[in-house]
Length: 153
Image 1 (spheres, helix red, strand yellow):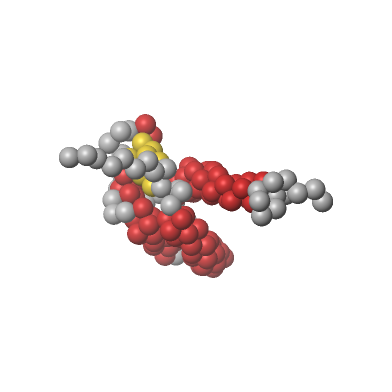
Image 2: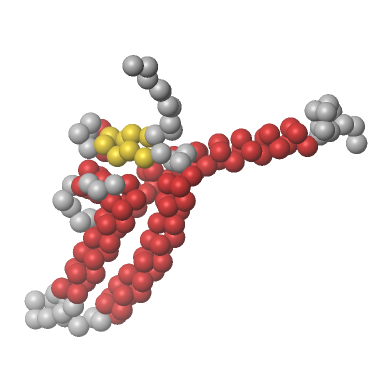
């Protein structure tokens, strides 16, 4: 049987160089890119909500006899909820298990910006290349008439 080879722009990244922990995505896929940028906007809105809640918790300076904030459990729950939200969103876009590959079992809030900062350049580069395909062709064709010859203006 003959085979059909289709070359895509899929990116495969080994997390921390571990070939067992691979994240794959296609930043040139328009639908995937659209979902990625929508996720980015949704995450920004959700982060604003979590930041507001965090400031409210931080404003409460009440401490127990041991010096620990009385609302420490609420602070921990807020961090957990943020991490679980981000893991769910990443898995919804990149596929089930992506968060496990990226973060293991940890719920470490600082890991998520690293994830997004690590993959965003692939989207920026792919989108830039796609846009330049159309803008370069359009630029080249602008100076030509219907016959395809250069038109002097």
